[in-house]
Image (cartoon, rainbow, N blue to C red; front, side, top):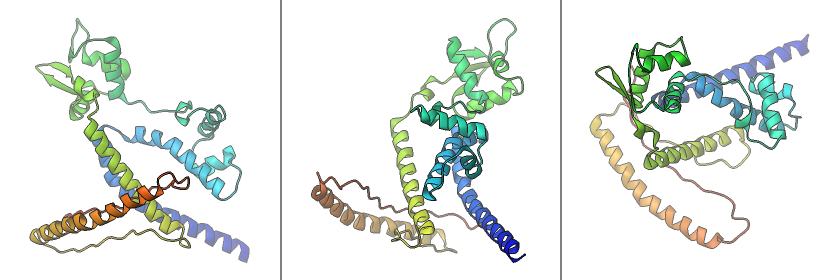
Length: 279
């Protein structure tokens, strides 16, 4: 009886911890989902893209606890369907990338409409509707009968992929050419946020190891004037101390050049942010 009680208690504690961690991750997802939705990535596309990531992390966790990465074990840890896990394991055994696995994927109607438009070679413009010639409405219905053509067009207009004037839909070809500066800015943001999360999670998950510096100063009930003062001072401090750290980093890079053990990357980041207090 005591053993069962202990087991039930442990199960409840683990469930509570998982739920608490999930709630914290969901806080972060507010900003990430905003980024995704503004970019045209919906829930179904995002969850599908998460599948190989959850697969990989489940495998890493099984390796960490020295357990065999069976289909059942990976499925249990990751929450993925067994057939998806099987597909991922098969492509790995064939030396292929996880993206080559045949798993269930969502249908993105707007992107498939554009893909069909380009594949058919119907030029840069189409009438929204027409009884006698190819039209945008016809395109959408060939992809899906469940999505209203007007809703699909509104989404493409929101993403600046298409425009509409006088009943004519125009494809914005320039949107298919990535802006190098924007791509680089996204990569930098991703690397910085990733490093910050890795540092914080290292401190949480490895309390017996040397912690990373991961601190923040927070002050509330401030006026806009005070915010501006703090903003200015933070920039001044960053300019002053970042140069000192950059100088040391350059010296150490030169010193370590050619050393076979020089296989690590160091990142020091600072950010500032302010927002209105939510009542």
